[in-house]
Structure formats: C-alpha cells, structure tokens
Amino acid sequence: MRMDIDMADLTQYIADLTNGCAYLDQLVSEGSTDVTRINEIIKGIEYQLGLSIVATSSEDLSLFNSSITAAKSYADAD
Image 1 (tube, rainbow, N blue to C red):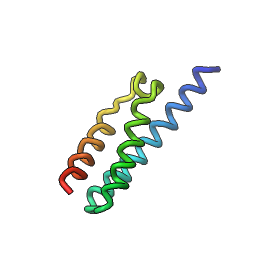
Image 2: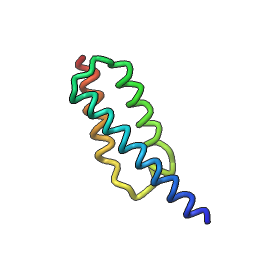
Image 3: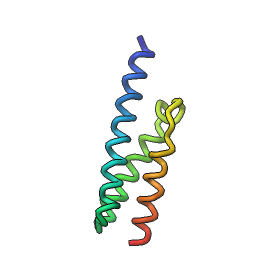
Image 4: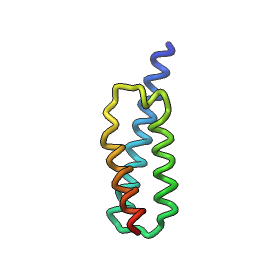
C-alpha cells in the first residue's frame, strides 16, 4: 500500500515540476522583468527537486534542471 501512495505522490510532484518549469520557461521566453517572481519560482522548483521522493527516484530530472539553469542565467542578466 505504501508503494502506491509513494508513486501517487511522485506522480504529483513530477506534474507540479512540469507545470512549474513550463511557467518559468514562459516567463523567460516572454522577457518578463519580474525577476523577484522568477527567483521565487526557481526556489520552489529547487525545493521540490531536493525532496527525497523526487531526488532518489528513477525519473530523469535533467529537463527541470535545464529550466532552472536557463532561468537563473536570465534573471542574473536582467
């Protein structure tokens, strides 16, 4: 039973990360000047990526990390 709950939790975290990174990518591609908001989103995504259930999963997290890297570069350049 616990395994099913963990999988459901992981599925939800991956969905949240996907949506969060899509929004982050959208802000960057639209040239948002709200660097504070971008940094808040980055922190939230990094927090979720650091959760044990996500960090130790077999999921490929490279696209999420790429989104964060691109957004950080954008925010630092602004």
